[in-house]
Image (cartoon, rainbow over all chains, first blue to last red; front, top):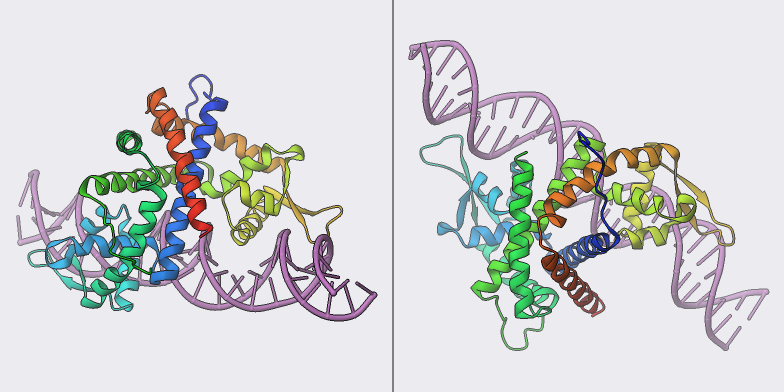
Length: 158
Length: 158
DNA sequence: GAGTTTTCGTTGAGCTTTCAATAACCATAG
DNA sequence: CTATGGTTATTGAAAGCTCAACGAAAACTC
């Protein structure tokens, strides 16, 4: 923002890579979202919530923790849990020892919905990414994403 | 959906990579979106539209073509262009030879807004991705994203 | 050329996300 | 104790996206 000297624009080569990246991530995201919406009646974001809950002890998590795990803001999660509650897939309950807190817990119906949705979702993830790349590419991707994550966190912390 | 035999779940190793991927892409997307929203008053999706228009002859593009370039549905683009029009950054005009068609054209104000927004955006893209990776990683990423894109397209075509 | 199909872009309704504001509660310093 | 500041979760409004439906114009078929 200070623009100390001059903007270092992306070279044509860098730009090609960047656009390929954005296109790939957007297309994959859109594809997975559409698949889950039509086959399971929920957007990916809600699916993630159910997954995280299902893997937690007691199938329950505190809201803030759940938000972290889902890369979500608290507000967004709160709205989402309200919707999931209305669908009967999640319930809310209080927390012992901290009366501010609230927990979201997966219901049996929620678990069933997840169990039904999961195979189709995993199949798409396999087809579009895991099985579409070589083992070497997968490992490279892992390192790349780690590097990006820490760069973003560094940047977000100013 | 047919579940021919049994779901091939992700191995723990694959799952780590997959989650790292989703986390990285979501965090980067959120970071760039927040940056543009606060610094330039527009979401990333709108910025992309302005970029594509600015690079086109006459700073104008047909709606369908613009939607393709922005990885957007026509509906979404139509709504977005309406908003951009209200902001005074884009205008619509007809097409010679096809009276169904419509073009979106960047206004001077739109170009100015883009010119103001671009440096900060590019800086973030550099800091979070281009400069955060080695040249080898960048090239690997390019191939990976290409592979993912074609896998998604194959899958979306059934 | 009349009828059918396809393409183009838009619209409205409903859903999801963002942002700012808020209420309730905890923790700590004095 | 109480005042101050931080944390937790929610809410409502506004913005953005998805989906289905639509009207209009082009393209195709016979």
